Image 1 (cartoon, rainbow, N blue to C red):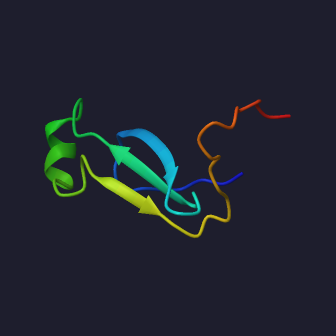
Image 2 (cartoon, rainbow, N blue to C red; image 1 turned 90 degrees about the vertical axis):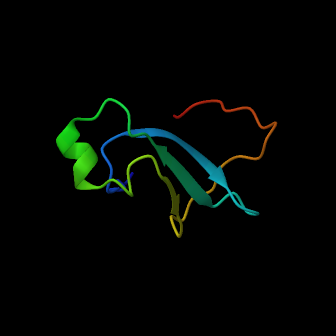
Length: 69
């Protein structure tokens, strides 16, 4: 298991995409943040991040998830 550090405190969702389902898209929000947080990184808050080269893939639509272990 690993961790991905992103430059925003308010991650809202993640999803795999791309032709091979090997790109992780991460959305963030700029709501419920302090004025200091909003002023610190105004261009980054509320962004969509594209994370590549993770070495993992998502599941194709229609494949049931059966859980871990």
